[in-house]
Image (cartoon, helix red, strand yellow):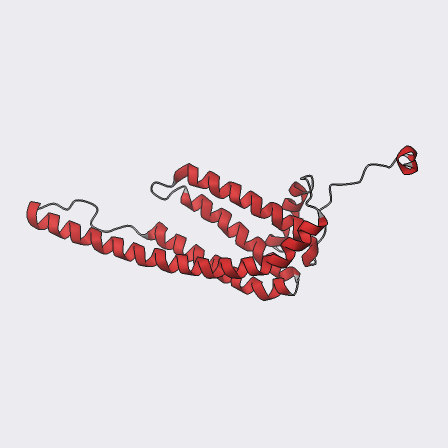
Amino acid sequence: MSALETIENKMATAFKDVPALPDSSKEALAKVWPWLALIGGVLQLLAALALYHLANYASRVIDLANSLSAYYSGQPVGPSSFDKTLIYLGVLMLVVDAVILLLAFPKLQKREKGGWNLLFLGALINLVYGVVQIFTYNRGIGSFVGSLIGSLIAFYLLFQVREKFGGKKVSAGPSAPVSPIQDAK
């Protein structure tokens, strides 16, 4: 059993007691999910490109400000090198998640479990990205809490439609016995 399957099974156990969506809602979500993955993948690639260009532009502006300040006052105004490590890590995670979503699109259209697995992997990566945001300047815990809430919603929806993609149905355990009085109604 792979690590991803182990995490999936543990999370399925955690999500088995949550209220289930109606079957019609699950079916509608399963139909729209491929298109959400495609749109999300494209938007994440565009966001990664924009963030990359923004980080490079900010670096050049900081270098210019430091050069001017050093020329006129003898001391730079800020750090001599703009630390872009976390920004580039964020860009890399966006690109990886975008590629996963784009790879999931055709499999989700065919309702293959592999497509669902890719969405699950993408949701896990987004959760890790939320943890990375804790260490990004001015992002902190608030951003992490928002990311955690978003991830919980994504996992809830994923486990609601897992059965539509060849996965096991998440059941709330054994159903309550039906009494003869209820049968008579």
